[in-house]
Image (tube, rainbow, N blue to C red; front, side, top):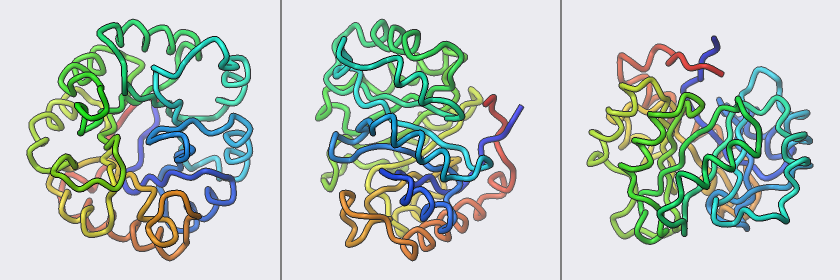
Length: 250
């Protein structure tokens, strides 16, 4: 049984960015392509290149895009080959209908049995046309292969009251009680990370704040990652219970 480290998750789009994220203090390196959406799927070749570049001791996750985008043109064989030594997989539920549970089950079965999944909840679920967060939480808690829950925003750069905040504490507490780990994302910067410390997540997840000029499409910068990693450590150390690691099956 391994443990999920607490701290900072940095989403990268290349092997070189993965190295910068590790040097800056990232606890988890996540792969996605921001030009393809909030959970945009990077090319499988990029997964392999980044896994080779990132130390084996650093957990890695990959985003598979949205369930609504999955079709017969996706090269499942290539995806399955490229998931070697990838610790977590996540997929979004934007623009899905009432059959999203069935479709998610089909994707999990097609990608590979036994993989560790992270359920992605869009805080702005109405804008994303995603299932209600309570429905996703209930499904995630019922699935042994789902080991964590990510709170994110579908619309990037929008500040209209739909970001994660203290009002989500009951939902987060319920997830924590189930033994799943919790990652908070959605346009977080060092100030936002400090403000969310009382929610006691396992991970703070960032992309834009780590990039040059705060633009999630541009390259990650070392000094920005260092600043965010420091903010994450301070936020998590402020809670006595965050001095330990949450045990999860990897």
